[in-house]
Image (cartoon, rainbow, N blue to C red; front, side):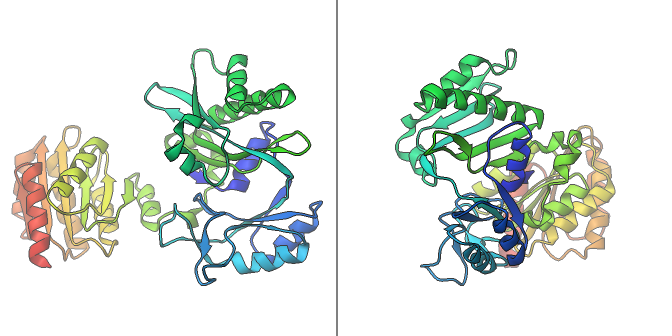
Length: 399
């Protein structure tokens, strides 16, 4: 689960991280009122969407010369004018794709006198099983280009979970940022605060870009992005309250109600599989047969008839779906239960696209018999390769 910049900053401030004064705003009037509470004379109006590249983004309908989703202004009146122009419009960045995201909230922040920008983030490095800092002296809007063209300017520092964050880690981060003296001490302290925040909140990503050095020699977290491990959110009801459903796909929200792991993709073959690894293999073999998966959908190891029915409805709510491939290995799950769910779902939703089902495992013959006796146009497959070939052929035939 991701949260907005202003929410991340409010959270980090609780751990002592230095941030600029600022207030969220949902209307132009609220933006104006927020600006009046800030010292001025420089204000920053920031679009709040779950995507990076806001500063270089463009708003649909404002033309190529319009300013992006982060704007520096010099009066309260300009704050209100820019807020009115940005709210309710769709912001397109390199991370949103052409569809963009509608801006429903803003963050009005005090301007900072920037002398230098740095990059600092924390993530889970699964290759070594540790939390890692990724830092660079080249922070700001062009960090992706730094990673592509000058990767030697990006440094990774892993933290041993047995020891946790130690003073030498802070010194290493400061050295990687080429900071000395008091700035090095500030960097080490901020790194400690961010590590504590990351670990305490079960975060999956914490990105500060930029971490800025001001002209008066202070380090400030000027932008912050945070994402959290969804499997650990039951421990953090306060963070769950920060969830913005308007930023999430409606079908993914519906899937979460039934404990289904669902991700919308761009293809035309809907997939329903049990197990993440099997789901990935299913998507791969669909691509090998010349088609594209429309989704990742893992019903889990204990799917019920109701859960399968819900999964079918979610898949069919995607207008791009032209066929469905069900690939189930019945270990914990019984194939006859899955078959009953498939038949019930197909009847309930008035299935109008080709459906290919591959079952294997516990009670597989009974499951296949239930499908055969249903009277529905369900095509059975003997294995995954056979299933992929059949669904691709069925979709091409129906086109």
